[in-house]
Length: 78
Image (tube, rainbow, N blue to C red; front, side, top):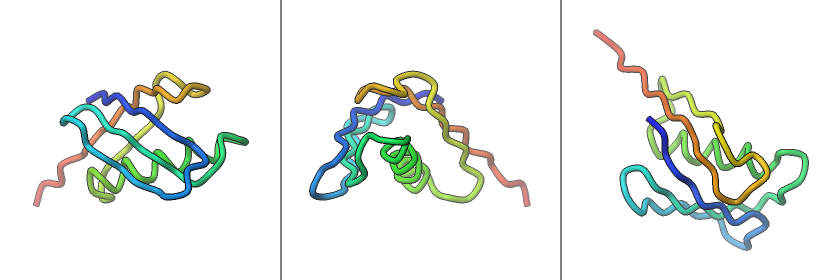
């Protein structure tokens, strides 16, 4: 699934807000340098979907506050 994410880097407080099932607003403390903010955004999105079996990667918007992120949730079969 693809989700749209609006990011504010260098914010005073970290937060993640789900605007819809496929749209998020994320604030991170990390600056937009050396890929720091992008890494933190991916961590927060991964936690929003559950950490086990979740793969996330930026598809579009590496250098932009508006990103499209691919989220793959692998269902475990017992």
